[in-house]
Structures are given as C-alpha cells and as structure tokens.
Image 1 (cartoon, helix red, strand yellow):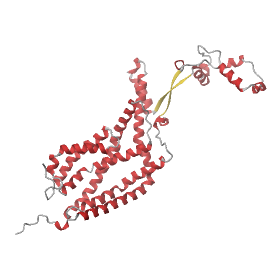
Image 2 (cartoon, one colour):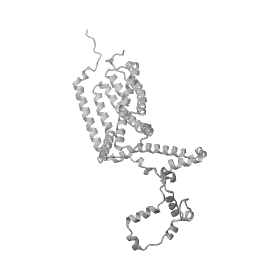
Image 3 (tube, rainbow, N blue to C red):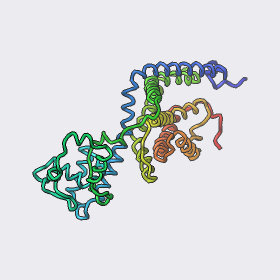
Image 4 (tube, rainbow, N blue to C red):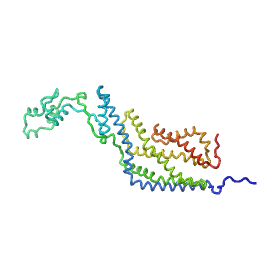
Length: 382
C-alpha cells in the first residue's frame, strides 16, 4: 500500500517560474502605485519640506542656545555664577524670549556719541580721558568756511583733514565690548543652505517622493503581500487581512521612531563632534532631506522582521527551534544590518535600531509559534 500523502494541498503548489511571474506582477503594481503616489505627493512638497526642516532647526536652536547659555554663565563674576536669579534671567532671555547674544566691539568715542544722541541730558557733558571738547564746542572753535570754499576744496585734502581729526588708532583692548541681542530666527546659523541653482528643484522632487512613498505604502504592502499569499495554503490566505495592516503599522512605527526619537540624539552627536573639531555647522537642506528619507525608510523596512521570520517559517526554511538556538548569530546579523541601514554611521541610530530589532526578533518567534508550519524545516538545526 502506498504511503498517504501528508500534503493535502499539493495541488495548490506553484512552480518556481510561476513564483517569479507572481513576483514580477507584484513588483510592477507596487512601482505603479509608487509613481501615482509620487505624482500626488508633488502637490504637498512645499509643506513637507517645512515639516522636515523642523527637527533640524529645533536641534540647531537647542545646540546654539545651550552654547550661548554656558558661554554667558562662564563670563559672570564668581559671586553671580551660582546666583539662581541670574541663572533664571539668562534662561528666560535665551530660551523663553528667543534672543541670542552677538559679540561686537566699538570705539569708545562712537559709543559715547551714540549715547549722547539717545540720552543727551545724561551724557552730553561726559568726556573720555583722551577726548577734547564736545562736538558742538569743537564746531564752534573751527571758523566757518564759505560754501564756495568748501566745494572748491579738493577731495584729497578733505580726506587728509578727516584723518587728522580722527582719534588715534585703537587696539582691541581699548575698544568697548558689546553684546547685541537679536531674535534666534534671524541668526544666520539657523538658516539651511542651498548652494546650487538646481538644489531647490531637487529638494522639491525628493519631498514629493517622500510624500508619495507614504501615500502609496498601503498599496505597496498589499501587492507584496499578494505575492506572499501565492505561496500559502488556501486556508492560510485569510491571515493576509491581518498581516497587511500589521505590516503597515510596523513600517510606520519604525519611520515614526526614526523621525521623532532618533533624529534629536543623532543631530546632537553630529553637532558635538563638529564643535570638538572647531567646525561651524552649516547644514545643506538637500543633504538633510536625503538623510530624512533614508533613515526612516531603513527603520521601517527593518521593522518588518517578525513578518519575514514568519514567512521563512511558513515556507519551511527555518523552524522555531532554529530561531531560538541561533539567536546570538541573529543578533550579530541584526547589528550588521543596523549599521548598514543607518546612513549617518553614528552609534546612536545603530543602537536605537538594534534594540527594537532584538525585541521584534523574539516577537517573531512568538508569531511563528502562534502559526506553526505543518511541515518540517528545509534546514535542520545543528
């Protein structure tokens, strides 16, 4: 008697060529959905660029505000360094009022002339140690020339007389140091650069593509899961309706983690490295947009790990026992993948991708136990 066939659904199996055809059709539909989403996303490119600028500008503002606060605290007299009232006043001025100090040097005479013009009753009779009579008295002492004589005076002679009346050359230590305060929004360091005439157009296209990827993501995942469903048993295809929203939620969760929680420490890391090297940060918007596009995409793709593990288990490549016995190797592979999927190459984004992936790996093991495969794995655990 022939042995009974354990595979009750053998008639539903597909050849390798049929699987490739299903993959081709699914990829074509996914790319078409992405192109349509890109066309729609171009209408929202401008507000998206403004939204993408927000994390970078917030990080720049936080970095320069902390730097200004520490610098001003360091210049206070010893008796005011630990004064709570002074610290509160500086904090309010920088963080709440949004003002940034700017160092300038001015000649004492020019500063006194400005004060005399603004507060004449207070500073009119004030004189510098090397200053002669006030300007009004000096003009009275000089005999008035006829208008014709003034016009006839050569330009070179006028310049020579002006230089003769000028105060002696001042060195930096003789000048008055001023701190001018201006709004943080007017600080040149807060502005993002676009160096080429074509960069605004490139930024516009990238923003449209980012919007198109988000808009078309439900359809892309649906078409890709259609390909996965072709390799499942008929009674298992109902799980696609569960895995599709689950897959989309994992992708959006990974992208949101990158955008809201990974960018701030990563940017602070880059800014601190630049400060330690004495390099002034002048971010380019096109580079930042590329970073914004790649990092959430890497997080979103990596967060599909539980579903990939389930798929490999369902097609009998790996078993639950193998996942558990080889978890150390899996963590090493995830560490390498985190390094490759982090475009900045910094340790923060790598660790913040690796740590959730380790949790998702064991969640994938639980998912495989919840939906066990009917057949043994193609690869036996060692």
